[in-house]
Amino acid sequence: MIRMTKLTDYGIVLLTHIARDPERLTRNAPELAAAAHLPLPTVSKILKVLAREGLLVPHRGAKGGFSLARAPEEITVLDVIGALEGPIALTECSAHGTERCDIETLCPVSANWQRINRTVLGALRGITLVEMAASFGPPQGLFAGRPARGEARAGS
Image (cartoon, rainbow, N blue to C red):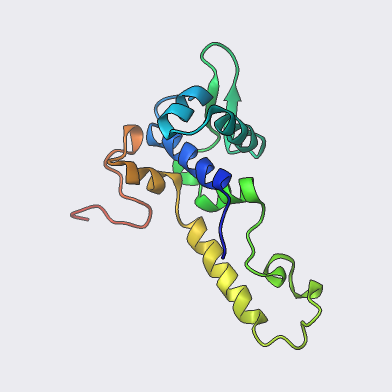
């Protein structure tokens, strides 16, 4: 089974909570833990990793917390998974190329695995935090009334 870890799943949930209200400058770990119904130590750990990987900006002080490093429509699910899991590859040759494969010259499916991997990466790259936040209900703040990426507005 191909599956991402719980921490990655939680990371997407936490970033989606932040993206849901883009006008709000920072969110702190206790607030996000309560909103996502997750343990505070887990949330703190994930936020630190996401900040270290450049998806969040940490802010110190009494009104400190974390903010998105880029606009939510510029952060993809692939970015989050890559930050928390590392590069995505369905097979060894997808991750490192065929030069690391012992049966490269005999493998009849290598090209298809490369194609499948590119398709999966493209799908994950095609979903942004704005689109993930849409599952919470209508977008809030600056993104209210904007169509999702690739969709036309009604009457357009």
